[in-house]
Image (cartoon, rainbow, N blue to C red; front, side):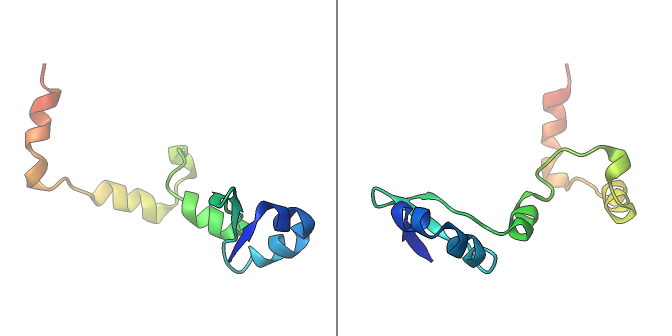
Length: 83
């Protein structure tokens, strides 16, 4: 859904409710300016992008980190750390 900023200002509640179902693009001077989204969608977008304490990580995530390996194609990057 795409609406103007004037339309959004006149019907804030309507578009906040609509954003629970799908992002709402708010335009300003003909260009998308702001996009309200549901809190659940925002959380999905931000998950993994915010630094967390190790103590806050779940067991599955800690196991995945412990079991991970770097592919051999990136071995040359280790040389950059030497010195």
